[in-house]
Length: 397
Image (cartoon, rainbow, N blue to C red; front, side, top):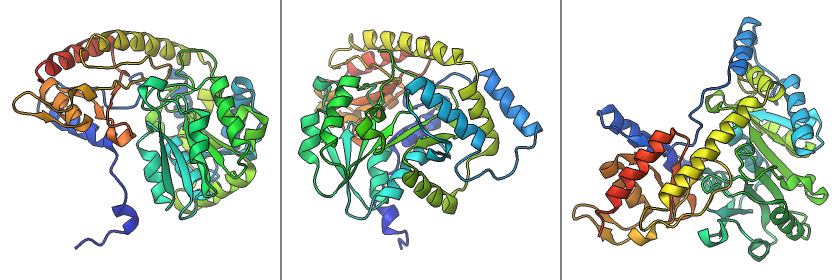
């Protein structure tokens, strides 16, 4: 007897976490699996940030913090946005949460009514449409293929805006594709949105610092968009702090107040010690951020070069984040005699079982013709993983 709520029954499980789980199970059986499914840096949190956390423990930062986070952290974020992004906010326009994931979900739950439409460009991060469904909204998927570098055009955006459109979720640099919107491309989208003042943009910028084409651009920079943008960011990717769970929104005060009200009822303020660590991340040296970015860029160049040599893969050059998203539909309908590949999920499972490399099929990212590989791993692992993939794929006829 299923007594679960309809709300939960309508949700899909996270495909990325499911693949990580499968790969962990194989590893536990002694199989040498190279995991390219997980979306987190393989670096350790920089030492000065860890020291700040240890000091916070000694200084007894062990009690509840204010719901939106300590003023010192929110002020550090205000300074960061001013210095790095040229954006003016006050501490009252910042709300910290348990990771950028909660920040995105807070914004959606605070803004979306049942039946409201939320535009989600595809390929998308797996959780966006599910969060919209959680809010009883309707995800409106706009697909952008590899031939347009997985980025939607202003014309595509305008074509799906209706009187019911409440929000657009924009992720740049993108998970799963690594695509980055340029200032000019964002201006094109902003010009369309200027005609539809009811549409709020939820701008997920968590991969801001993992960018290979220069200065990060935010849609919040355009005067007509600032009051209609919920900028989402956090420390997870730039500072290798995924497990510390600190994200934030910067937004108009009415949205921030709403998110604080919501968060006050279901999680309260994020971890006190993590907040002090995040404060040190924003106020301390940024040298480790650039070192990690350079390492990711080197790996990006390596993985693109090797993946382009895999017969049957169609590969573009990602400009940010740490994912490659090759098109692999040429393998659909092939078989090695034991496994038959009908879609990218079958292909990802085949690569796990035969090549012992964990990737994620593209269907749950809204791009069933692709697979996602994370290159947040060592150069040696990248070389060996692509070698194994190439060998396994050569068996498919």
